[in-house]
Image (cartoon, rainbow, N blue to C red; front, side, top):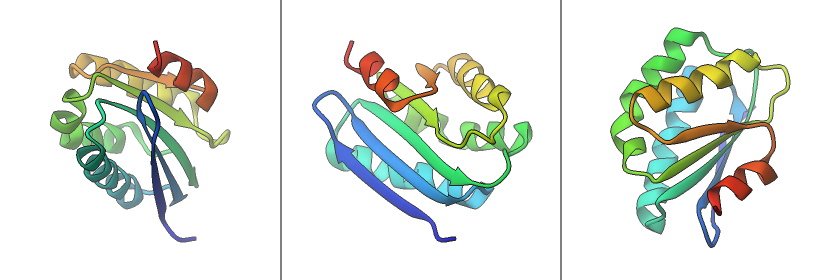
Length: 122
């Protein structure tokens, strides 16, 4: 399975989609690609749609990735996070939202893209 990234500028946000193997490397690449797309689009809100396949990352890896990307994320007004893989543990999304907010990032986790888009357009 190969890594894929796409970005679409919407009226209220940048919608990025990442897919491929769910690994530390893929997720780090996804965030680097997201930051480049955000800089190009000059959007201040982002919808992260994760379509990665494979088991959930452990909490230590998730937090490490968040720490490495917090400066870029803190520049954004809002980040909506949707993980479409129903096999991923729900507590990982809850952890992402809680940890992001503790790091000063306005992030919310959603189960569906439509819900995330509604929040971003408020």
